[in-house]
Structures are given as structure tokens and as C-alpha cells.
Length: 72
Image 1: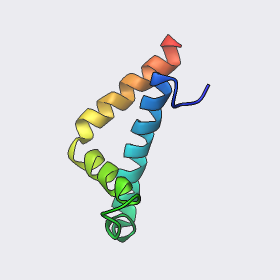
Image 2: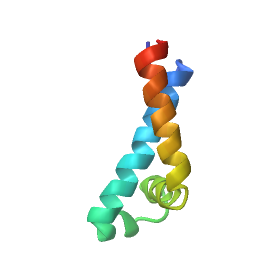
Image 3: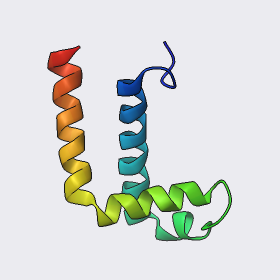
Image 4: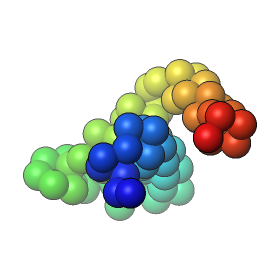
């Protein structure tokens, strides 16, 4: 089943995108910061969410890991 139709998979994809964009911005800030508008601006926004809400994103990643490993 596609990640678009399964809510748990959709949340996993969104969390992975947030974590990946925040990590790439910490390594290569100019790569993410040059595109703040348009479609590629989505990655900049995801990186900002990952930076500003990092304790909450980390907790959500841990919860998602436990649900994937032990719930499904």
C-alpha cells in the first residue's frame, strides 16, 4: 500500500523528511537556504521545523519507532 493511503506510513515519511532536511541543513546550510520559496522551499520549511521543534520531533521519531517495531 502506498504511503499516501496509510496514515502511519505518511507520518513516517513526514518525520523522515523533517529529520533529513534538518540534518542536511546542518551540514550544507547554503544548499537548503538558497531556495526559500516555491517547491524547493518546502525543504527549507521542513528544516526549520526540525531545528525549532527538535525535542518534539525527536520524541515523535522515538514513538514512531516503537509503534513500527512493536505495534504493527
